[in-house]
Image (cartoon, rainbow, N blue to C red):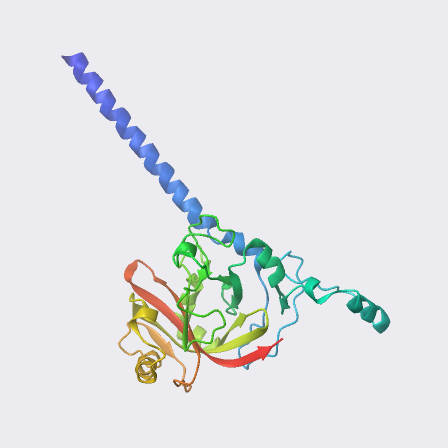
Length: 292
């Protein structure tokens, strides 16, 4: 009887050890995933001015050696004839599609769902924007390489056009503990950071869009694009009335600029820390649309 009891305890103890080992393994895998999430985008960064004192001119600086970034020779040349010959020997279809330092031709070799690039100065937000023709939630848990990834991607849903012509375009990104993806949107909760960082930029293959940030605040988890008809001027006006003065929010910062129903806005959305029913939104209004 005692031997049977001992065997029973040994079995229980063994199972408990295996459960603990499994739990520790799962925790380590989770922490590893959290640490490495978003790192696959480290080689895809571009640079725009950190100063937000004025709407900048189109960006052409910061030469990078990365394959998806346009490579520019560091040696200037004054040989106009050589330039002319090179241009004449290059057919238009063979030229890369480049805006600033973003080489869309190289990005499309990786994934044709990439259609834009977003940069928010003085944050870690420096990523391609994707939109799938399939399940809208695909890039919630897949990276630009279409591989499963805890970090997912920065993306929009099909309800939004890819030319940013909608009254409101909603861009999603995860709030990760390692600070990647859209986690640094939470920097705008600091009034000083909000005051000193006024613009973000969206690069398209044919133009650069500059947005002035007018509001940053905590909101509920409703699907904004399906909750409001932004093509209805009255409903859009009602929405803007709250977005420009979100006093019911637990935390908010606003900038005293005019935003009307004739404007185009972009809403950047991410999760709140440990609050599943809330989202943190940073919103900007289009102030410059510059063709390349």
